[in-house]
Length: 392
Ligand SMILES: *Cc1c(COP(=O)(O)O)cnc(C)c1O
Image (cartoon, rainbow, N blue to C red; front, top):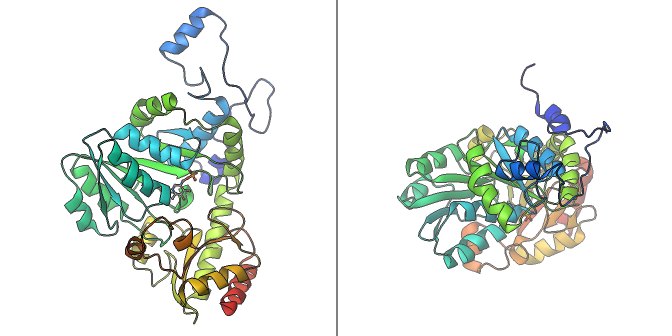
């Protein structure tokens, strides 16, 4: 057969059936595993086989099903699932970096990723340089012979910047650095960062992969050499394992991932088109919108524009708060990637920790509202946003 399509892989890949022949993936709630003999236990500790397990911190059959399914979707060689997206980010950076190393990161990062790069890594002797991720000359100027990792998000949170993955990978690889992409906003459905030159891809599976607001999770995808080598060694000894229950929820979420993401992205694009030019809005930010500064790059790197759009309200914080408080269907939350549409005011929540200058540098104005588009009907969402804008 030809290479299977994503939707088929997402329903079947990785399934391990027990002797009962269950149709739906089994949930193996077990910490440990027993052996037929002392010899078997010894052999498994020397070199566990593909489908052999020792302890749930190292691996579990339900978690492995999820890892195999997301690995197949991404087209990676291997994956390791973690307790949260941040456990994945932290695990990758800790596995790759040591005291004395240099990291180059895009400035526009998810709040906790920025905290790790800005506050935690320097405490362990890692030097960090932040750049404007959209400026390739800035990456070239920042990368040095001791640069071990280049780290960024594309699309970024919350101003939806798009970074040229192929160009940054070229710069990084020229210096021998590993390229790590946090691909949450682009989703595994719309962007294949490994094909564009990245070495490691990270997801918070809390977002679109669960997609229904239930469980935390994360995953790291990359080469077998990295994932089964330094990454697995770091993660299995430091305890960031995904719970089997969460892996089972993620497995079921994967079955509908393409359907949900496409529906949500089509609605996001519809809303961006319909809201562009609205008198109450200084800007509508959406990667596939014609006035997005990296629209052409976004269309080259991604198959759809993603499920998030940002609205910059004229009238700053008072207008943004009136707008948020007037929404009837869309709920106020700092989360994203949910079946329910969610609205966030980054300046006072997710990016509150930053100074006003830092927020200005990142384009996070007091009027900016990020909207994570859910599965509701597009006309209901347009009506909700329109009436809330009228109230602002
Ligand atoms: C949510 C998110 C994370 C962190 O994931 P958690 O599952 O909340 O730990 C990291 N990066 C991006 C871009 C995210 O949206």
